[in-house]
Amino acid sequence: MQEIIRQFAIPERPNYISQRDEEHVFRAAFQSRIPLILKGPTGCGKTRFIEYMAYQLQLPLITVSCHEDLTAGDLVGRYLWKDDETVWYDGPLTLAVRYGGICYLDEIVEARKDTVVIIHSLTDDRRMLYIDKTGEVVRAHPDFMMVLSYNPGYQSIVKDLKPSTKQRFTSLLFDYPGVEVETSIIQSESGLSAEMSRRMAEMGANIRQLKGYGLDEGVSTRLLVYVGRLIQQGLSPYTACLSAISHTLTDDQEIRTSIVDIIKLYF
Ligand code: ADP
Image (cartoon, rainbow, N blue to C red; front, side, top):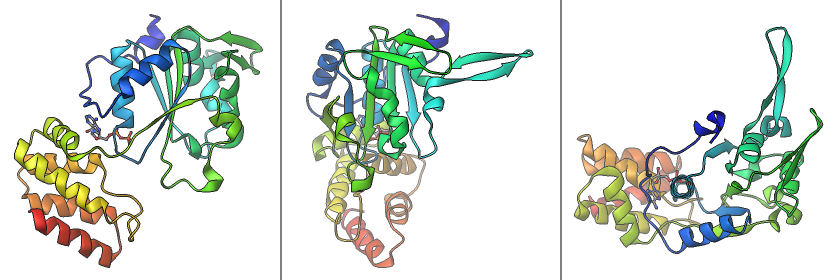
């Protein structure tokens, strides 16, 4: 592995608790050189999953958080001034294409359409990148894999991917896990007891019922893990839930009261 890409390797096995057959699907997509979209709400385990798969497949992982000012140049690379001359620096996408690895574009629908089209030639049989600034054509390394993620929940019609982009990918659907799996996640990520972790997972499932009744998104697994960690630091479960759940999820007084009522049923 080249030195420049080695720094993106995942050194230790990430803690990932499987939800279904996602590892199987990922491996099949990687072996077939088919790009992948991970869809699911925020904090449900998409990033942790990709880190885990990168570790399992011994692939470097280059993550880019997409936003509306992200340009194709940010992904591909740019000339910079160094020692009285201009030197070309590969961007994150080019590094993964050239040396092999996963390029993970997180929240892809936030990126501008003219930025997204740069991935087209890499996500069909051509598997190549044309760098117009240098005139170079980079053929993708056999270990190159493109993975996108987005949250279908808060994305509006305007922010959907174009069909011509979408139909280059196979997809994995993520959601908040069931109580059994979420209990294991909270327990292993925060160190709380099995009994307390289960109570939190059940409370989380209950709070998620408020989605659509004033809450855009239910409480994420991430926030439940935060509660567990705050409790481990000595906060009472009730205070930890207020601070990591009800105060965080909404600024609407009425909805906050509904969440607190649910919290009181458990702690
Ligand atoms: P997303 O990328 O979907 O927004 P993350 O992957 O960052 O969410 O998950 C948020 C946190 O929730 C993680 O840092 C981890 O603590 C926990 N988590 C979620 N799902 C899992 C899982 N399946 N196994 C272990 N931890 C998980």
